[in-house]
Length: 103
Image (cartoon, rainbow, N blue to C red; front, side, top):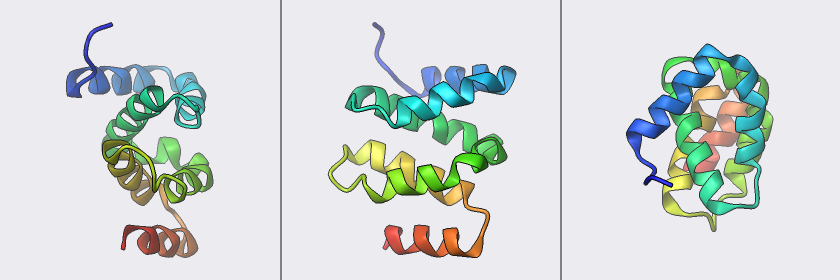
């Protein structure tokens, strides 16, 4: 398999923009026990939320929970999850929870 990078993450996000049915598999990959898959999914989710954060808003609670549990995660995965969680919050309570995790 080719190395993962920005171009592949953007391509994966573009596929999701074209087919919203891919959102559920993306979230499943984020919740995977496979660290490499989770990192790629987090990178893709970051690219999705850069342009269309509303697509992942229905998963806000799960994504915030995932970010809160990512302390021992690869730093890049954690960084992507932090950006995703911050972008998908849509309630005051969610924003406060994410802000507390970013400190």
